[in-house]
Image (cartoon, rainbow, N blue to C red):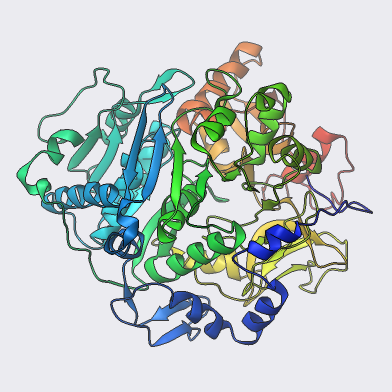
Length: 631
């Protein structure tokens, strides 16, 4: 993970880049935001269209349940689509999509709005109304963002579940959200193979009493079961008279009305649902994308994230559309059929802004420089990184080989909870490989000691955010107490991120990694409890512990320690069976790198597994204070 080198190399942007940037004088802007936070964010919000202006930018009367743009009436989709089709942008490309098999589909703002309106009419005809939850479980196809936008347009709350999650994970999320409608595909393509999305939905729905309708997008065309009266083909629905109207009224929403739920692994076995709202989220994601990635009308933006994760929500779907940008979206794997797939598409479509994960960069580094060097990447002018700290070696390769030493790299730190970039460079700032730079204007971050005081320069501590921000989560769905306990109780009045960090003498932040029981694999958050619960559900397992250890490509890999029940013996075959079991219960991304059989697990006297001890032992590091261990 990134640490502060004694003498980090500093990369400065060119004078030409600074002169043309959307946001100049970041120090002065940050100072203004510090002096007048409501005035700063109010000015950003005024760039959008509101059905009714807000009465109060920020309501702090019920901390930590902050409210933004109180009294304002808005709908994020109105600002993503409706307002653009009243201008010359109606004929501008909103979305370019390429399938893994090479198919290409394009949508102008006019065409995208038409598709969203038609599907919104379908959802309304199914009885979906303001406040209802709709679960979306799809591959990376254009209908996924269309479904999200259609839900938001009519005031429904979408819950997108990553298409790599298993039956159990999907069932739990549908059940918790009490969705009446599920939107899926017959299947999706990944690495040349079909992902059986519809069959996974069918299995999950065997125990979901609330679901009344399933809408199925035909992507692969392979045969899937369709239950009469429940399952409907997307294309059939869009051909019905109720959907043919090319317009659909956009619901007037309160700024604080829910926009979406996004389930993320926590420190208990049950994933928690982060709740984001229309108004503040809209202002936060649009402002950060415009300033950090310097988005201009002529740009072609590619965020490689899946919409099943927050990066896809904020910076593949909503952020670019709010700015009237042209986005590129790719269905499949970065190395299929060859390791130049991404580079060939950058050349083909003239991508100017690329935002991806360190895992992807490290994975593509392994194939060498010849693959990217076969392609003309001169259209690129800015690069970005998201998901986990990027190690300096990968940063320099990305800068030199992909950016040809011309493109600044925006190494962004943020979370599902923050909704928007929180600590990030701006393209006019000096850059240090491995550092996320400084808080975005209006944000205030610090590194705290255990006692709650600011850590010394270079000292590792807990990363905290000290002021509210507009795109922040409002609560945990149906669990406000857990929201307070998890994020606001360690240091009262201060948001606890769950990450450790250091700060250098220039005020640059160096993010180190998670301090709680969450493992980041390829930038995806997985709770240790969810993995351990999956292991213990196997008849051979009595107890289990999961930890994350450094991995050259994934950032972290899952290592598990298993105590077997009587009458079961350790074996390589059983280890493989347990790996597959976790993959089935949680999803392939959660499959452990290694399963170790142990006679006991280190525990406190209260019975809590000491994962830090397991992690230290695995890495050959000092185990620290063991006074609280049971033995």
